[in-house]
Image 1 (cartoon, rainbow, N blue to C red):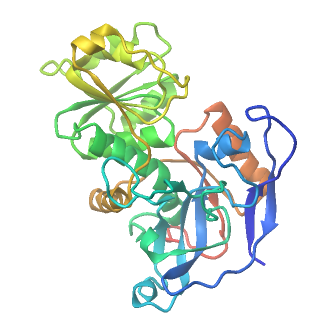
Image 2: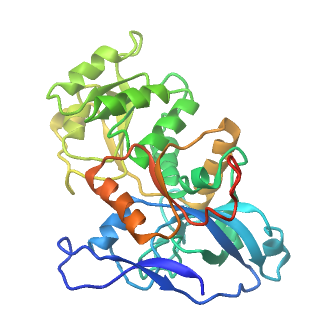
Length: 364
């Protein structure tokens, strides 16, 4: 029978428990008329998977495979012509359901359903096969391997909405600050904003990560552990544009207080997460400068389609930090350990079926 990786229930309180991984057998599923069966080649880890193991994510369950990101080949399809046209194509999976195109948020009355590890949907990508509606897949970019394509969906979609939909500053010559470089969303935001012609600056706790970000196109960067990092950033901005137009932030904390010192009047802070705590302060200086802070979570099916098209057109390649081979619990555990310590620079990916397509450089 096909195999999947889920979490095993053990006693413990949310935030204190850490559910172990387990390899389980799952039944084969036949597609209905509009569905396709994908043989998954690779799947990627996100922070939400770590939160699920700590029971810090809404709807945590023990029956649904983990992971939201996946790439693979369509090996069977339902009877409809729309489903049949996907046969034998390499695809990437839309990581969330119930949000078609509305700019303000999901249209579904039951809310947005992110794949992997919760009661919201039985679908997850850390398994050998996935049965999903054909409307929830896109053809993978031809210039990427399956491992690279699997790194795109959730972090790419989150970064896309933050940079293009929410910041309103993804334009040539604009100065964009991306905080906490090294994580998947921050790196995709760097790649997207750079491809759009922006001058991108970054923050990190590591000189090594700053150096890597500059190799990827960042114009400069500062260590956020320095008390005066905001002043150091100002010194790096181009002489004719000594301000930041927008900040793409996943940390929270004092970002508004610090950002108010170098953001332009009417500048925008896009918050896609708050790893430093669930609240941010909003000082009067930010009010007087008409600064806005905008929350942003993942994105719509339409935005996912636009993101994949942009990646194809600009030949963008996501950053992979490390890959492990097969549904090997011990090795996958190592990826979680890296995410817990923040040691990664880029995506952590499971090469689910390394023997199926062994050629180096093969799409799959």
